[in-house]
Image (cartoon, rainbow, N blue to C red; front, side, top):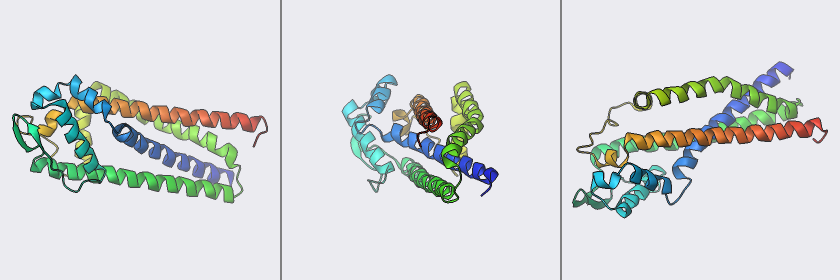
Length: 233
């Protein structure tokens, strides 16, 4: 295996790892706290209980059920609770159809993460089997992959900071084939529970988590290179 081919394979493997970390950052932020304390803080911040005429305890019960549904622990998105002065199903049919799409997207992302991890592992094993200088290749490849993606990350960050609403709309238009994500707060309880500000804060949290994970791996590779330089291999 030539050095050029080995370098390309190493960079591609790092791309797969970075994509896996991005998808992991979504899962960490969305499901990292089993008590959903971030959600509760957001509900208080955006006065969700007032908008729904619900107690916080009931809102959190609905949240836990919804999150169980999205991860595949519940079959049907339906829960009866006290909302808007009546005891009724919190979710309507539009909620159920749209959230089924969201569920498929989320679970598909988890499957894609596994594919990326396996692909990266196979490529790295190929470098090892090909008797390449993989110990030196991988740290350099990660830096190159990170530099290539940094422009995209920065541009996305600027775009979301300038006009989150437009970016949020474009995201839905790309990943959903219908307009069921367009809710009416007057008729849909779910959009009152999850206002745009909630998603804006969630994206920031995911972005910071992703950047943190990138920084940690970069630090690991820096230590790796230092050990190699000192003759520890």
